[in-house]
Length: 118
Length: 113
Image (cartoon, rainbow over all chains, first blue to last red; front, side, top):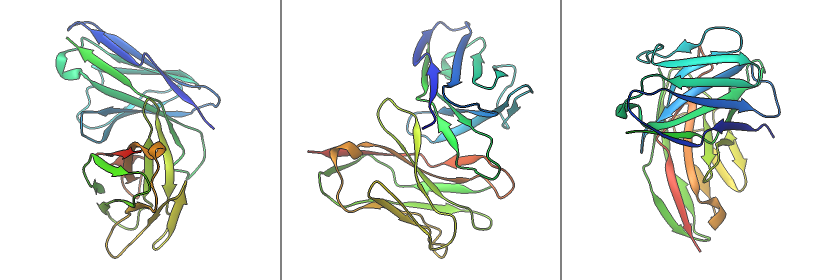
């Protein structure tokens, strides 16, 4: 099956620092990757859609200057939380999609990254 | 846009018990619903899906029937196992016009031996 990894699995940082989270598709090429955020006991909320070689598309209410997304290759997308604050503490999940027209369900999810900002 | 509501957990059952996790939705048109499962330490995996009304999705002993009249897609399993302990998410397309998926809040399932 298709495997997606995330690194790191958990990170603790001080307020004001920036944190980079990597999402990799290990055995397939992903033209599109998605970044989600999940608060405790809440559903996954889509933050942005990352397309290889182009700018990410952000959902309403998500600050693009706060959450920088780069999708420089067909197997790697990164999310950088800039100047992190305690309210950014959350569980960040990425997914990757192979290019299959009309196949909405072919998103392969990473295991998530837990971010704690002190 | 569409929305999905699923029963809150955690749900704790004994092995071999019958499982139902309720999922209802509001949507324009007839979206295709899904169930995803997240095992401890792993990413979400597609468990099953349905593509049209009255369609039944099934996988690993789990079943869910897409009921258009009640806008529901309840997940069921006749005899659960300890290895079924996980978080289950009901999901469907956000709208008819895009390929984004929206998720329910997830239901954590604990199966006791």
